[in-house]
Image 1 (spheres, rainbow, N blue to C red):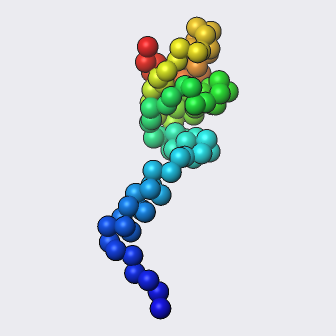
Image 2: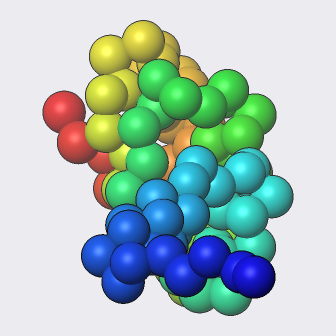
Length: 91
């Protein structure tokens, strides 16, 4: 006989699944489809941030990048150049 989970426990399990971390590929696919997002620069490589910027420019998505303290001005300029107005930095 199969055990039936209480509704509350089942909902909590579903919420935990929904909060699971997204992969880089997931994020790129979302941006490619036009989905904007807020990104923490400390969680990604410069190459990944550049890739996100290119995809945002192509799809029209807006990405906001926070915690940019470890990026150089030249890094920020490169991301901005690749994003062409689709990247917003939080300082």
